[in-house]
Length: 81
Image: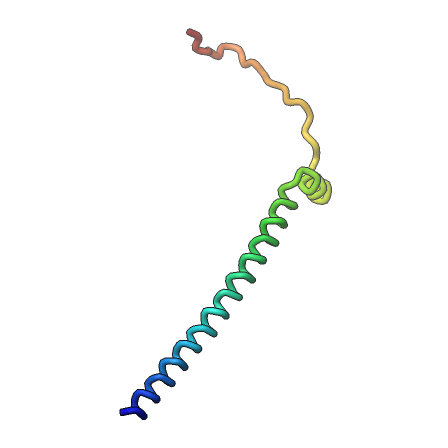
């Protein structure tokens, strides 16, 4: 009976230590993902900054738009209160 209890104790201890290593590895993964998330959020903020947007507009060879002109077509009705 003592041998059975001893083997059972060793098996449970082994299972607990294996779970401990698994939890530790998952915590390391969580930490790495949180760091990666912070880096990506910083990169998003950099791309959304006005200076970055202006620079990318210059690189894309877009033409600046002037002041728009609106035409009043004759015979159009506008509802007023």
